[in-house]
Image (cartoon, rainbow, N blue to C red; front, side, top):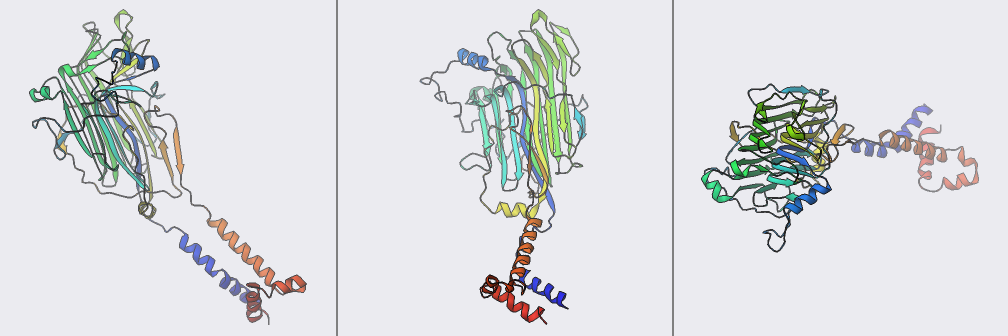
Length: 493
């Protein structure tokens, strides 16, 4: 009977603390998709630049602030849409979507699948890109991001080099446009020859689309160094499309370069095509990916050659070597991270390496309780600016489809779930991984502290401690006086 009464006293005293702890404990909730596509890049041409090559570009193309239209500020560019009506997509028009080549079978896989032994070397983070499309899309607790760029030429960490034909959209950043479209030169665009067409559109429904296309004499790829070969093409196009739909994040990219001429006829190629696709619902079972790249009609010095993936062939005159890059894919077993690098047609020599019609993806996926995401979403959040997060490239001539996303928006979050995120994305060459953990702590520890303090209080308030003078004095003070009363009323017989 005494033991029962003692337990009752402990329960009465502990009730407020136990009630407070119970309210603070997270309730069980359904897990939903949380993800971050840090970069989805497709490009018609890409070359890494070292310090000397950057200086060479500035030497070949010196910029005078007095005569330069944008005063040599490469972060400034033209915003006003100017494309002729017959080729203008507009904010609500149909746009071409990335599609794979019908002549090739893509490499496919899921979580835990890999391709390639080592990630292809990316070189310095400063890269020159021609005819690219860049996309970045994410939904994580407290933040959403839908952004990207389309450009004729762009230098990472610097900005657009052709500022009259550039687009950059962000759906969640104030004072930044969600739709931009440009054609240049405008007069050539009206005639349909020798121009570049770029377009970007980002929506809060978590859909971002980016496009860059060139025709004939405007399809020029300027070599970073004066001593290296430049290239031309009759047509190039890059497309990046990222969207969240029906509880899944889906991304696709395509790039195409047609009638490529490198080194004044030293190398000619009828077409180079690359296609990348991925989707995830945040689980290992839901991660799927595919990648394919091919070159048709390759000739070296006018002689037809075959370029199997991963094999390099020497070019005449010591001009270097050419080959088709083998795909590199790294998908974690838990489906939390995905890296795809497909360099397309690669030309390498002593001074640098150049890639035609390639693409890259760096992304992270996970799940989190909806309730946590909603609680965080009610607080002010920084959606971030993703303008330089990813860069894209050319795409195949595919079917057209409406731009608007019909997918449902879902919540994400993280408590006790591992969420993997790629550090620095493409500009760092996809080096390393950042593992972010949200761990629920303090449950057992808080409980132990509360009951330990309760036991100590009961000990101080007991009749045993009152054998001492200081104990009797303490029993007349709050809260020990109340404890003494409870002891007399319920425990003492």
